[in-house]
Amino acid sequence: MRYVIFSVLLCGLAACSGKSDTDKVVLEEAARYHNEATEVQEQLEPMIDRIDSVKTRLALKTTPEAKAITQSLDSLKTAFETWEENLVEVPGMKHEHHEHGEGEHHHHHHHNNNDTKDMPADQLRDLQREFLANIKLMQQQTQQAMDRAKGLL
Image 1 (cartoon, rainbow, N blue to C red):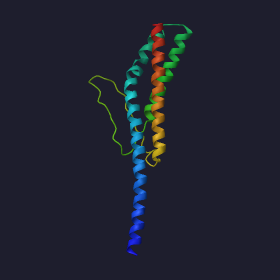
Image 2: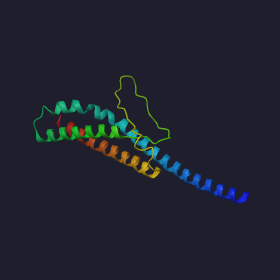
Image 3: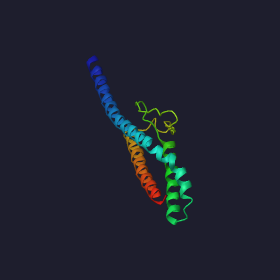
Image 4: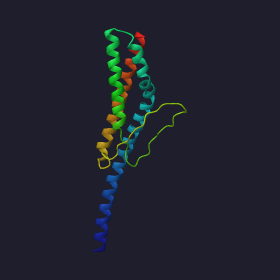
C-alpha cells in the first residue's frame, strides 16, 4: 500500500513539475518580449522627448501638412505615455533596466503587476508580445512623423 501511495504522490509531483517547467519556459519567453520592448522604449524616448520642440517649430508653419504632423506627433506622444503606464513586468523574472547617464531624461515604467499576478503564463506571454508589437509600431510611426516634420522645417 505504501508503494501505491508513493507512486501516486510521485506521479502527482511529476505532473505538477511538468506544468511549472512549461510555465517557466513560457514566462521566460514573456520576459524576453518585455526586455525587448523596454529596449525599444529606450530607443524611442529621445524622439518622444523632442516632440514638443518639433511641434513648436511646426506651429510657425500654417500648412495643412504641418497641422496634420503636429496632431500625429501629439497622438504618438500620448500613446507612448499610455503604453508606459500600462506596461507590466513578468512576475518572478529578471528584467534588464538600463541606467541613464547624468542629465539624460528618462521615463519610468509603472509595471502594474496587480492585474497580472494571477494571469496564466501563456496569456502573460501574449500580453508582453502585444506590448512589444505596439512599441515597435509607435517607434516606426514616430520616426516617420519626425522625418516628415524635418522635411517641412
